[in-house]
Image (cartoon, rainbow, N blue to C red; front, side, top):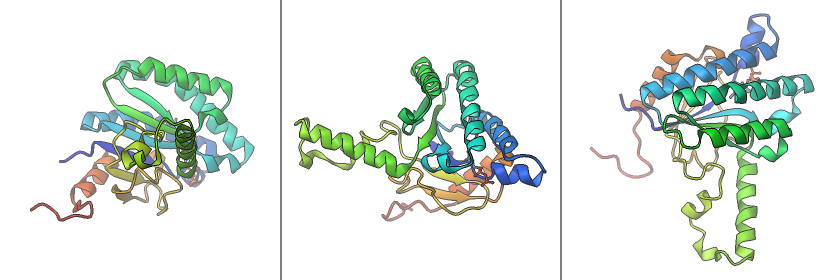
Length: 235
Ligand code: FPP
């Protein structure tokens, strides 16, 4: 099996999964959070080198305050436990998104985790928090415009490669496979630039039920695709 180097995941369906069990939505998020840890390990053991998950979008702030607080609490706790798992599994963690919009304590835990794991040579794990692709692109454009204004580069030097170096995902290869769980067929403002040539896999399985077996199915599906990149397929 040809294992994709980089898998991106939209972890959808925590709320509906919990509701179907007669439980509050936040229970779904808590189980979803545990599943993140399992899938990180499974993916890495299968040979995946980069995994990028959508944990909290710029649009998620409009959810009821109780749910936003519960998600922030989960992320806070996750950053703490991740410090240990990252050390154990040699995982290198990077948060993408605008972390200036987060509470000081979460931001500090993120910086601590990134710093502590920066030299690890295991799974490269990206967590999107307060992330929106349009916001990421606008932040990149603003920074680029500043650099042009300061004479650090001229507009003619702005190639795709140059632009990518301003994105939160700089130095990370584009995803080969995008997985979205729980039946919706949308990108929801996720990695719009980076997914230009990515294969998409949609499944009805809600995120807390997305197991290693489901991951294998997604990778098998990816293997059966004809990856052309707009060119002619090699025979
Ligand atoms: C979508 O489910 C999921 C989210 C908005 C958040 C995803 C967060 C986690 C899996 C937990 C925290 C993450 C980490 C990395 C520790 P939904 O609420 O939209 O479900 P629904 O579509 O059924 O309502």
